[in-house]
Image (tube, rainbow, N blue to C red; front, side):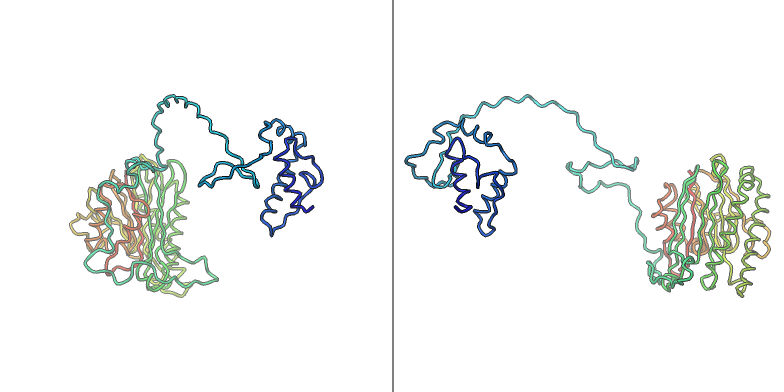
Amino acid sequence: MSQQGDADDWWQKLYEDPAGPEPGPGGPGSGPVPADPADTLDSRFSSASVLVREVEPEPEAVAAPLAALPAQATAPVEEAAPVEERAAPTGYALGDVAVPPAPPEPPPPLPVAPAPPVLPEPRRAEPRHADPRRPAGPAVGTPGAFAPPAAGPAQRPEVRHLGDRAPTYAAEPGPLPVADPAALHALVPDTVLEGARHGTYTLRAASVRGDSARFRGESRRDVLLTARFGGGDDALVLIALAGGDRAAPGAQDAAAEVCHWVAAAVGRSQGRLGDDIRAGRRDALRSGLQRLTDRGYGRLRARAAELGLPDEEYTAGLRALLLPVDTACRTRVCFGAGTGGLFRLREGEWQDLEPVGTTLPAVAALPAPAAPAGQGVPGGFRFRATVARPGDTLLLCSGGLAEPMREEAALPAELAARWAGQDPPGLAAFLADTQLRLKGYADDRTAAAVWEA
């Protein structure tokens, strides 16, 4: 007998004989039954045989439940009524034998479900890092969750440039500077951004490559350095920035050297400088910082001689700001030489704390500090010690930003509108503020601003 016939005979006996077939050759559990992939019906019975073999039932376990079936369920049908065609039959047909479905039993009565308990309204999860000053919007999935926000305070307008004429150069960087594979450490990024908060003040600082250098694929020549020396209330924060002439070949190296040397000297003298600032010893601060600045520029002159460059080609303007961390001390000390500037925004008005030549329009300029000219320091030594008031904003900047602050009324007016009476901007907003462009001013810009709480 063929393998297919054995399978048909075994399954037919299993349905008609209550005792079930005796296990034997060709029956379930007697070994694997190969399936013919070309015959769909053989594959179906082969799968069923494998399934029964995996379970491995005992013969008595198969025969016992079948013996308990009623006799009429296994009695042969003498005359089978023709099976009517129905759209959705509910019975089963095995071969030529039709099994009518059992009559449906009436459904039991449905129990009355108790009323659901009243649960408290779930709490709405607040987003992480939520701004406490901004009301939380509707949760996702609630009506109006994606509705446009209600009208609130006017957002800061986007200003691409100031004035009635657009700058000559594009606003975004062009080609990258040429790199030397033997001096990759000398690569200078297009933009540097820094921020901090200590005691009662917030610091924002940025150095951005000028439009002219971006257009020509030249490196940024301005340098920005921020550092904290010491710990606790005795700590001292230093912001140093320097910028050189963009036409000078060694301007960037000179700016980096003078910044790093001055910062190292301040770090070594941090304890003495902190004591003088907290005690208000202005004369001691002036003389000490002037000697420090003179030595820094003396190193630049020596380096220029080694390179065979004139002194004016290997130099940079320097501005440095000393900020005590101690909240009881609000004295801010600025010093430097060469191009650059120090401005203060107080009660919505800008003040030039070291005016050179011209002053800002409609601003009461303070007298220039009567500091003696330094030995070999370009433009003389600049020193200023001021006591900060709550709400003040100090702006320390290189020549690329100091010039338009003094010469273009639109720039200080726009910055005053953005900063006066406002919380300190974030890093990205401060970067956008320092990049307000004006036609005719395409040099590097480096700025550090301090907001007093």
